[in-house]
Every structure is written in structure tokens, then in C-alpha cells.
Image (tube, rainbow, N blue to C red):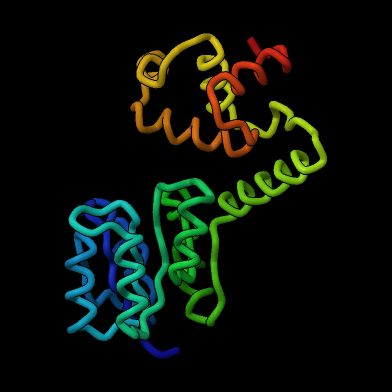
Length: 216
């Protein structure tokens, strides 16, 4: 099998080192460049022949979504594998629309990273099973809503259920973050996911749902 040239774009040095350690034993893979942000990646692509870009979505100066769009307009032959912490279907859908051939969650990278590269190398696409499961759950929820049914609590993860209960008790995102010892941004992400799964956009609707399900 011919050599497959890879560029890694991620602003975390330690994570890039981890990816290098996964690629090193693969005789047909070679890292030809590393970038710490989207702008650096685009400059690198102008000068370096590359078959695959492995790219985070959250980067300084230019984030992954914007870089994806720019790569598409460059007529670059390089395919893009998104490797991210963004575990939601909104980011997933946008990345695919902008041309990504793969979407792997960082939490799954150790198990799925090489398989993802091999799949893309064969001309196919690769998506983390966990993100596909979430997408399937959201589609099921949408179908239930279309039929006038209210999704059950079981569609939510344990953390989402915790956050729903705290929202229903009247706590703001900042207070929830303090109580669960997580960041406010993490609370917002979980809250966004649970509202999508339930199809409920307002705090009042979430509280009403929790009451209806005897969840408070």
C-alpha cells in the first residue's frame, strides 16, 4: 500500500503527541506536518502534499469549521477527518456539510482513530458509533414528537438527567456547574443536548416536562 500522508491540526501539543504515537507503528502512514490552528493549517496545505488532514474543531485564530470551508475552496485533494470533543449532532451535521469525510470523538480516539483513517483511505466515510447513536436517538425523538408523543426520560444520559432535575429545581447554569463540579460551558452543552432530545426549548417547558414525568 502506498504511503498515506497526514497533517495533524490541533492546538494541544500533548494530544498531537498521542496521535503521533498511534500513527508511528503504521508503516503506510506518515505525518508530514502539524498545525496549532486553522490559519497555520491552511498555510501548510499550500506548501505540503497531503492525503488526509486530521483536525480539531476548537482551535484559536481560525476554528475547524472555518478551516473546513476554506479547504473546500482551495481545491485541495486532502480529505478531512474531524477529531473533536463536540459530541452533538449540530456540529456533526455542519462538519459533514462542509466536506468532512469522518467525525471521531476524542474520547473514542484511542480505539477508532486508525480504523477511521483506514476507512477514509479506502474512499469511505467513518463516523464514531456514539455520534451515530445520538443522531439515531434524536431522529426517534423527532418521530415521537411528530406523532404527538413525549419522549421518555430514558432518552437522556445520566448527566443530562442530573441537569434536568437541577433545572427543574430552579438552579441557573452557573449554580448547576458549581454543584456538579463542572464548567458552565459543559452545563450549557449538556442542556443543549437534552433540549434537542426532548424537543423543548424553554426552561418552563423543561420544568413542566420534569413535573409530568414525576422527575422532581
